[in-house]
Image (cartoon, rainbow, N blue to C red; front, side):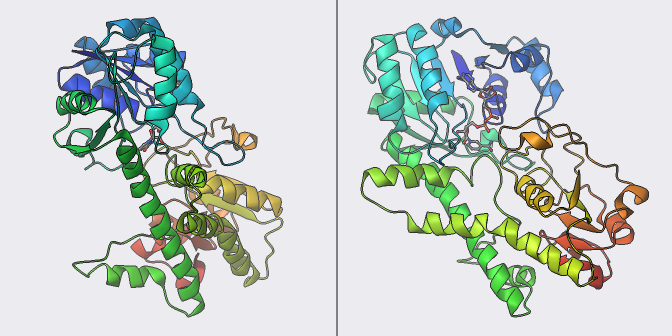
Length: 428
Ligand SMILES: NC(=O)c1ccc[n+]([C@@H]2O[C@H](COP(=O)([O-])OP(=O)(O)OC[C@H]3O[C@@H](n4cnc5c(N)ncnc54)[C@H](O)[C@@H]3O)[C@@H](O)[C@H]2O)c1
């Protein structure tokens, strides 16, 4: 069996390696030549995936990368894991999926299986992707080729989360498509969860991410309400979490980040309109979560104000640029929004992140490209009027921060781990 995985990013690369480790021959396809070159020479560009893991599979001849889509004709199955962002008007942009479909279709072999993994609205696989695949291949889905959807469940930075042990939801266009896709994933993944259609599988992924978005909004709202009452929401969550049933902890923060939670729910919002439906929970959660960076900046202003300082002209160090702890992924990170808001108020902004030594060019925040993380030394950290903890990486020495900094605005309750003068710390 030889399979292709299109899109060798945070989802496609670990999945490729898992199939390769299970003995399946994998051809990785990506339009980014630098990634193709790096992988073929045994290097990884994702922090939590080691170069040796890639090298092992390349050497064994089980994994190879290419940008040549003509090689699709040698494949029994093609899995697609390309980006699904929102456009400027916050509408779904499925152009990467469609482009991939167009590139794959002319080379698709009769009887081959195509599985979409990118998170998207229900109907993408059996309407949009199906249309381009049928047009380009001259074959009918469910007849000439098989078609399925299977959402990725990746938890970057979580060492206990392994592709092989995370149950895989699969939905097919026809029972035969489902059967083919289940057999494929069964080669590399322990538990397969079949559902009745591609749409049910697409909707499952959206439910999972909407669930997170809404619950994070709930604790963010409670954080503000409880703070006004003099109650620490972190203490309350710790206590509530001792309940052995019916409660699951979610934690507040400076706003949503990452490729999934800030984006995916709006894929459903957009599609729901076609059916005359509104998604009030999603909209409300979005409103609360996007209001968080401003709330944090207001807290920082209050903190500085209590020391007769203005934000304008103050030196502020943003700690943590990645959107979650212990990873180097800064996509959609609220740290950028915080930095923009700080700069707009006239603050002098710098950042520290051991995972992001220098800011790469991004579409949304090109003006920060090239800025380097400050060094973690007493001289460098003590120069700042305030440190704003946006992401609490585990290997930051918070005890140093307690000693070196003048004022800390903590959105992650990170300073609870160390002894620190409580007058210095403002939770936000
Ligand atoms: N990162 C996560 O934790 C996560 C978790 C679950 C689901 N997802 C979903 O998986 C999908 C992929 O996300 P990701 O984080 O891996 O993205 P990514 O940006 O890390 O990787 C996507 C890759 O696709 C490549 N690519 C773009 N257009 C292409 C094309 N036309 N042909 C071939 N390659 C192309 C890019 O060069 C890149 O290497 C998205 O829909 C995302 O929502 C991501």
